[in-house]
Length: 132
Image 1 (cartoon, one colour):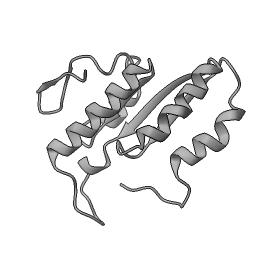
Image 2: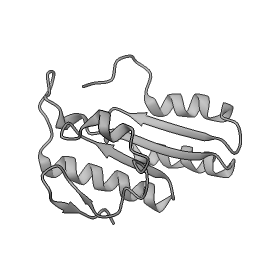
Image 3: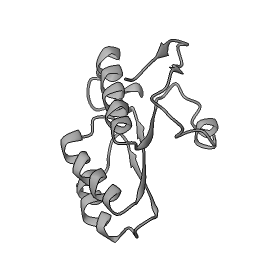
């Protein structure tokens, strides 16, 4: 899994964010957990200032079989996932990270998909993780 196209996701959020109506909902769908949090923060703050509810749904790209590069280690993937979820939690932004081990059709229809993703959650290997 990799991003196609030349426009950076956060550039799109910056470009189109001001057009999202106040008091609406915006969902940021990322094909990676390797988001630039220093760039994401001000964009989330701008949404919050306009009372736009934001959710972030990220896919851990390195959990899928890499075809054009070496995958990150399990430890690096876990650290990125926990860092992103902690970052979102600190800003009261809903979010979750999906991996290749998740049953995507089943996960995407769950009503609680974005409910407190930083809480204790069993990983596909049945390990419990706590982000924060």
